[in-house]
Image (tube, rainbow, N blue to C red; front, side, top):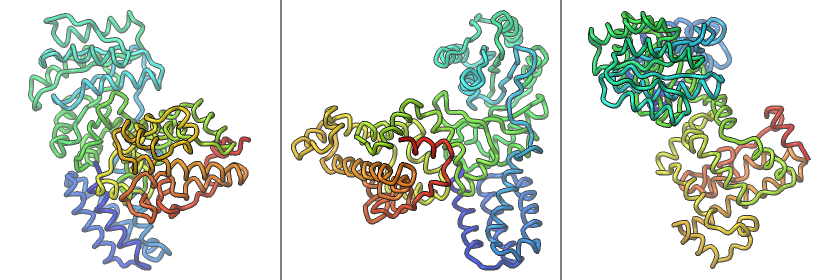
Length: 498
């Protein structure tokens, strides 16, 4: 959602970093462009003014202008102020974790306008609390206005394996809240999630209902759910709720959409409350803790390696990783292994999501979009490998012209697509052998700099037709090598195993 803003800021900072020295006029000119970029991203005017003033004051200091790399110093200041705007980081930051230490059942009340995604977010939080925090939750729908709202939460509860309060037709929200409190106590639930009713706009009846439920349930957390796509309207809604209900945090939904990002950047300043979670998709596991440092990194094109690692930890099964590590140590890599890698990439959000999290990959992501390449590439490659016999997957050399035609017909692709997958496998297999030959770890750089996936992904630059210059995705060996000493200790140990 921050792509446009990120591109604009990237252009501004590229000009700054390209100069050996900066004057105060250079900095002020850059800040004017940053101001325009933020306003075009629909960031609230008071937020923009405060941000620009803070950055300018620090950036025109002598320690910046006289430093060896003044452009990079300015980028660092902007990054720090972005983090502060989004909620801060470190010991001085507001707590963004849910307060689950209160006497059970801990009541979490979800508020917001109709269509903001409250019901789905309630189910996502129930799933998150069960899987990551080990909490037994119960969900209750207090929405008696929207048709089938209570049934919707019941169905979602079954999908995420979280108990829901039985529906009693005709019962009013305050009475449902009382019954939910009793039911949660009897079920020994750790957390009770109350999904309240919304309206198409803020009105007195809605606020009166929120206040009544709040007085009955005494919630530990009151989370305002707002749709990122509504821009400044989301900020206006937040202001309305802030004056009426004791909010403890904000949840931004549809952060994966094409909104301009103004709501996310303005929300903390307007409400005075931290953004605690961000909805990143329609799936019920598409919710993540909102981390200002990571979001600022994405906006400035610095990537989000921590989120990438977390996604990898979730998507990659330990036993599969160990099996692959043993094969790597032996220099073995067949098409079944390649297929497993492709599926793991799909589970981690696909090529676009991965590129967006990797530092310096914004141009690659743009190139992917320009060429029309999407995650269907992974699906097609999986289909090609799936059309092969188990013996062919183990021994790709068996694939002669006749077999390739059969595989292409079976997967609905062309023979040239089959050849690209085989070439990709061949490059990766060579890298595995090199790892073995060089003693395990030292050969790892070959995996990142020898073509790899680029062979199967044409149209993205590079002499070999792949994503030239990208680690592991390059075409024709243009990718940078990886220094094994910079890898995490556990990965070094795994790759050094014989």
